[in-house]
Length: 189
Image (cartoon, rainbow, N blue to C red; front, top):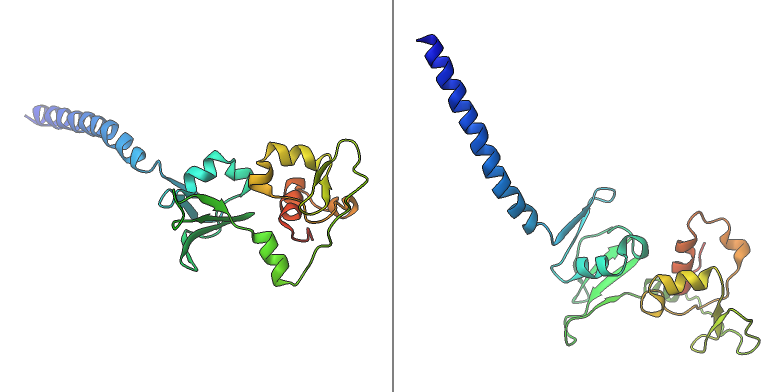
C-alpha cells in the first residue's frame, strides 16, 4: 500500500511537472511578446518604451551608441513627451502631423543657458578632405567626419558649432562623446 501511494505521488508529480512545462511554453512567449515594446537598462534603472515611439526610434538610430542609456523615464516637459538619455533627449512632437520623434538640442540649449556664443567660422580656405557647413562657417575633418557620416550625420549630430581643437580632445576616453558634445554646440570639457 505504501508503495502504491508513493508511486501515485510520483505520477502526480510528473504530471504536474509536465503540465507546468507545457503551460510555461505557452505563457512565456506571450509574456515576452507583451514586453517587446519595453527595454530596461540595468545600469541606470530606467526603461525605454514605445508609448510615444521612443524605443522604436532608439533602436532604428543606433541608440545605444548615439544616445546611450536612458537616465529618466518618459515624462511631459512643457506639454511635450520627452525622455533623457546619457547623450541627449528624445522629443515626441505630438502636435505635428505624424507625431515625429526628434532629438532635442541639448548641447545648444546648454550653451545658451551659459550664455556661450560661438563665432561664425571661416568661409574660405577649406582643406581637401574637409566638409564645409555654410550655416556655421565651420568644417568637419577626419576622424570626426567619418564618425559624423556613420552615425546619423545632420539628423543625429547636427552641424559643427566650433572648430576642432584636438589637443583638448585627447583627454577624453570616448572620442564619439567628444563629437556629440562638440556637434551639439556644447564645450567638450
